[in-house]
Image (cartoon, rainbow, N blue to C red; front, side, top):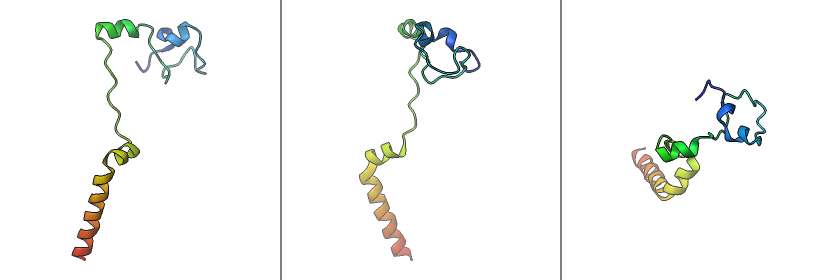
Amino acid sequence: MTGEVLCQTCAYDADDTCTFPQRPRARTCTLYQSITAEAERERGQVRSPATAPASLSVVWQRYRVWIILLAIFGISLLITVF
C-alpha cells in the first residue's frame, strides 16, 4: 500500500479522530487501520503480519541459561587452547 494515499481508506480519518500531521495526504502511517479490514478478515483476504525478528532482550530472557552455559564453555575452551 505504500505510494497510495492511506487516509481515504483509514478508519481514523472516517470518524475524524486522526491527529497525524500528514493527514490527508499520508502515504505511510503507523496508526493506519483499514475501514474494510473486518470484512476482509472475515473473507480471509487479510493475513496476519509476519512475526517480527526477536529483539536481544527477548532472546536473552528466553535463552538466558543456554547463553551463559555457552559463554562458560567458550571461555573454558579459550583457556585450554591458550
